[in-house]
Amino acid sequence: MSGGDVVTTHGISKRYGRETALDGVNLRVPEGAVYVLVGANGAGKSTTLKVLMNLERADAGTAEIHGLDTVRRGPEARAKKDGWVPRPEDEGWPNAGFFINAGPIVTGWPTSIEVQGHFGEAGSVFGVRGGKVSGAKRGPIVKNRIPFGDWDKYEITSKDGKITVVLNGQLVNEGHDIYPAEGNICLQSEGWEVHYRNVAIKELK
Image (cartoon, rainbow, N blue to C red; front, side, top):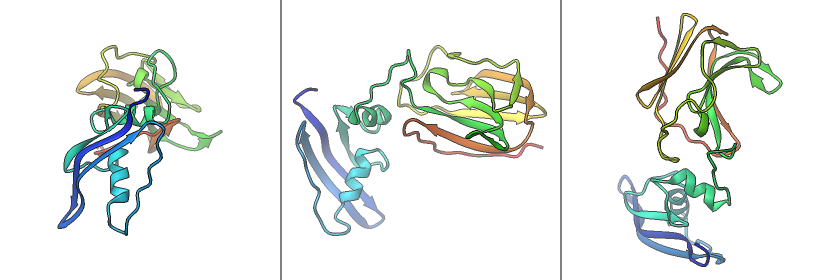
């Protein structure tokens, strides 16, 4: 979009209870322009920026960065804003994942079993810093991925020395003889902004 608008909003509105933070805001920021938001406390400056970064959802209206909707294509929009373009064929994707049964930190990483959230290798399972697992697959094991920027849903079960990974309703990986067999659960975000939501942990008997 060379020479076009970098940021556009169309009638974005946001309320917090009975207070109106944004009321039908229309904004255009052309490429190369510098805009400053000025206003008193509560005027909606921070809320506008949060909507643009998809940290807050507008009650009405839309916002775009370089023509990308910040809700439907939020991560990609934020990436493009800062000059990063993901390429599935290389390591350009933001790295994320879950450290299962995490124990002591060894040279920066916990001894654990990692379930990979990296877009191109989602669902991979492998040992980290002395962690071990047998029978699990690693690499680009899921061929038909959802569009980049959509939410993945993981269901990870670790019980009796076994681990299973269900990704978006499909069993994609499993392993056995895992070490450590118990420990902490950690979320990983490396190299780029990664969002988690609706995280639930259940102790299995």
